[in-house]
Amino acid sequence: MGDNRFTRPARHPYNTRSNRVRPIRTPGGKLAPKKLKKRTKGPRCSDCSIKLPGIKHLKKSAYQNLKKRERTVSRPYGGSCCGSCVRTRIVRAFLLEEQKAVKKVLAERQGKK
Image 1 (cartoon, helix red, strand yellow):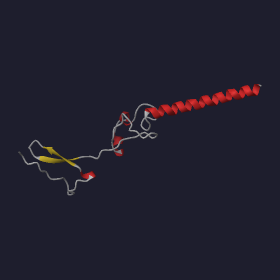
Image 2 (cartoon, rainbow, N blue to C red):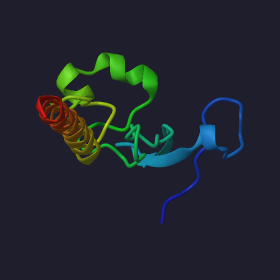
Image 3 (cartoon, one colour):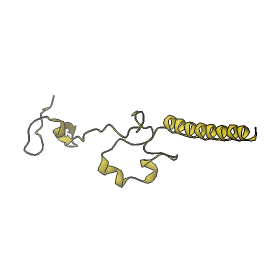
Image 4 (cartoon, rainbow, N blue to C red):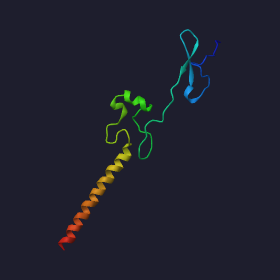
């Protein structure tokens, strides 16, 4: 059985959140450290705060290097709201307009009498 020890990169030896390391076996048979990136929560819906499906979980600065189709979803409020919240917004707006139209019709009928 070979040696399973490896030295950490750089001069900071502690296993903190920003200094995570995973051992990787090299072709020569030695263990070398691989620095791991922090995982992000990813984008969330602005209304109900669930995770947005179809969008990668990256750091804010990494989104500028992606293509537009990887950053958003092709619908209104694509990168900021989930589909169900967009649907409720549209239905709510439609019902408000309908209500205004009904009030207008009732006011006209009252005016005729």
